[in-house]
Length: 247
Image (cartoon, rainbow, N blue to C red):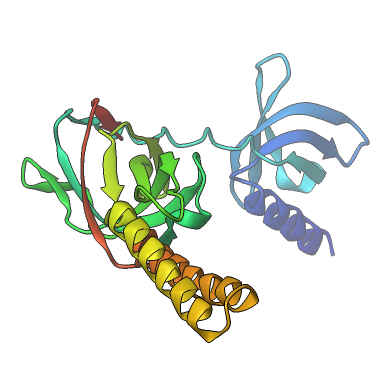
């Protein structure tokens, strides 16, 4: 029985060998605070709080209480090399969100992705497919009879390896086809023709009805000629206005 108890005590000690011992309890009731140093099937080495090393036969040990070792320090963060992408670098992007200038406003953002990797020293600093956020720096929505839609775009952020970087690019202006003056003349001409037809039909009320019909045709043509819509998958080229540090 005594040998079985000693074996059980030794097993407990060996299981806690990698841990720091808080308290050693002897069979005579004495408790010793300190640190477990090691042992064998015959004896235990224990350092008490004073720094003295005690060698105690296993048969005299009633038990031992261990505390968990302190957690290891966190691994050092990888010292990733910072790469500077210089101003003037060209970045090709392909938009994901279609852009309807008539529904856009300054500050609105659109999703895009890098279409060609940005290479430096043979390495892709900004890989193809990196997420890009475009922003409308300015929006001009033309009227129905003159001018054309315009939108000025810039890259706002680029995400590389899950990290988002602020980017400053030169503005990129996109303009719709200007059909204003030609459309306005067409509107007047068609409306005048409608009025003439109405006058022939019965004058007065007929002329008013004919004029309204002619004006409607002219306005529809005007709206179709001015609106600027940029479809998804359109490719744009931006140029960095300032350096970007990628790390």
